[in-house]
Length: 318
Image (cartoon, rainbow, N blue to C red; front, side):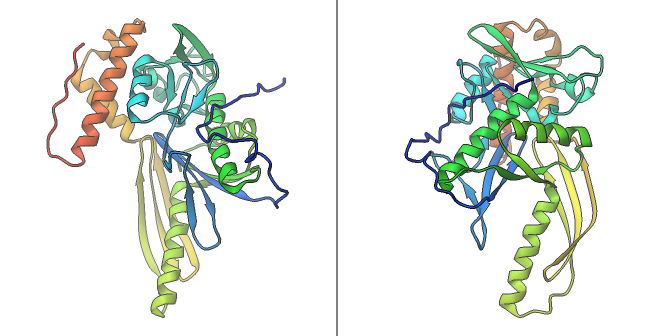
C-alpha cells in the first residue's frame, strides 16, 4: 500500500533559493520529542546547537492543527494554540498514545482531551480525529507524528541549506519495543532514517559527561569518578538514571521510567475542579469540546502562574 504524502504548511517558509541544496555529505540531526514541546538540534563541531524557526522559537509546541485542508504544526503562538484546543482542531499529547492499544488505561484517560480518541476495546491501535469545518477528520497517531517531524526536518534543512535524511531521537525509558517501532514508522513517513533511539536520561548523561570532561581539562583535575542522579519529569513521562562519570568514560548504573507526568497532574486538577467532567463532556458536541478546552487551558494557565506565585484563582464557567 502506497503511503500518503503530506504537505506541511511550514512556518520555516522555505524559498526556492533555499531549496537548492548543494551536494554535501550526509549528516544527522537530533530530535527531542516532548509531550508538550519539542526541539531539533545539530552538533556544530564543539557544542550542541538548538535550531529555531523563523520566529526564533527553539522549543516548538507539539501539536498538529487540522482546521485547514492541509494539516500544519507548530505555526501558532501561545494564544492561538489555546484557541485551537478550544475548537478541537488540534491533536496533541501524541507521545502518550503512540504505540498503545485501545484497551490501555492511558488511552482511555486521554478521552478527556478536546479531540476525539476512537477505541473499539479489542486491543488494536486507537485512531484520533480532529474537528475541522464542523467535520471529524480521522487519522492515525503515526501520521500525525510524521507531520510534526516534517516540520522539524524543514527547520533543520533551512538552517543547514542541505537535505536531511538521518536523525537520532530521544525516547522515554518506559517505551516498549512496539512503541519504538511506531516512532520509527513515523520517521520513515517523514523521510527520516533513524540512526538511534536514545533514552532521554542517556542523552542528558552524555551532555553531563562532556561538561565534566571540560571541567577536568580546564582545572587540570584528576578526573575521579562522579556519581550523579539524572531526573527528568516531563509532560507525559518521568525518567531517571544513575550514572558514574570519570573523564570521558560514562557508565549507566541504573535506569527507570514511568508514564507519570505533568499531564496526569493536569487531568487530576481538572477532575478536582469539575468532578463530573466525564458526564458534562460525554456528548462530544462542539459546545462541550469548547468547554473542555476552556477548562484545560485555564488549568494549564494556573500551573504556569504557580511557578512564580504562591496562589492563583481559576475562573471557569460550565
